Amino acid sequence: MSILKEFKAFAMKGNVIDLAVGVVIGAAFSKIVTALVDNIIMPFVGILLQGHNVAAASLKVGSAELEYGAFFQAVIDFLIIAFVLFMVIRVVNSIKKKELEKPVESPSISREEELLTEIRDLLKK
Image (cartoon, rainbow, N blue to C red; front, side, top):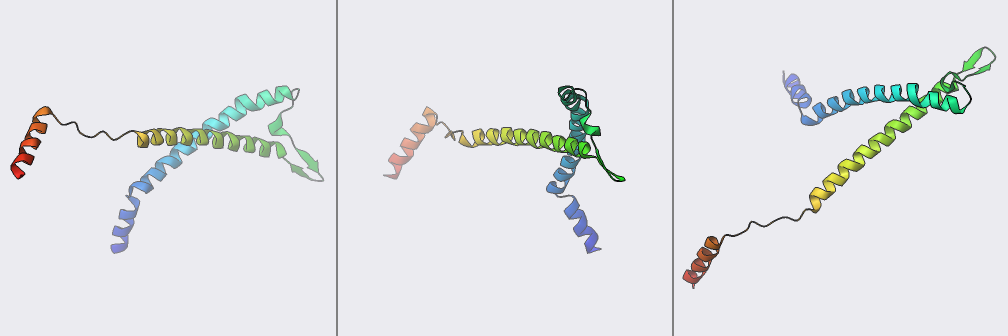
């Protein structure tokens, strides 16, 4: 029974839940990037290459067919995802840095508190 309790405590930790949310969002983001690459970037690359479909590019060697176009498209997907994640992390880090650089304001003392402090100090003497 203690294994179940231990597993429940592990599964309910904030880091595990954050990771699960990150995986789901990452999968959705991957679909967006794949759609961007498949429907916008690769057709544009095909136009630049005079109508050739890069994703369908392949090389036949004997009875085997090497589909290097699909690999090229996967590399472009990866580069776009890596660049966007880099930019997001860069923005988050700059926001955190600005928060850390903010000067810590000391609480302002009212005139009444200042007078009470002076009276206290005089009474100590």
